[in-house]
Image 1 (spheres, rainbow, N blue to C red):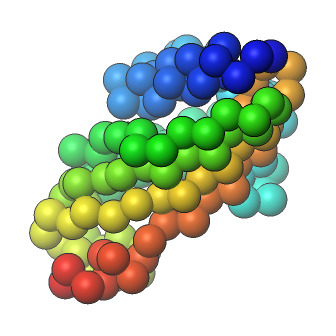
Image 2 (cartoon, rainbow, N blue to C red; image 1 turned 90 degrees about the vertical axis):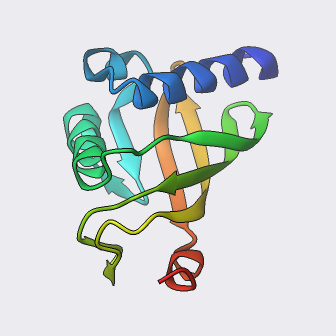
Length: 128
């Protein structure tokens, strides 16, 4: 898949997440998707994302950096949101926080097959 096409596919995936368009998630995510090495499958991946939106009602994925090197995508996502209760083991309790996620994806058969994600927990800690 060409770089521009993969970038466009990734942007459509992010729009799917931001719209919480769960019925169409399978268009972007491979049946055997892994997240940080754990096999989740589409249903497990969807459950993880739904839990994220339950914990963070104003969750919005904002692409700040996107590098396409097929079959891989590297992205830096920015979040400015108000998690409820405890988030990443931190007592956020509805306080607005800003942080980034550095995430790498590997695509297979035109879908996300592997996701490696690291959240900037230290940025959140510094705001509490």
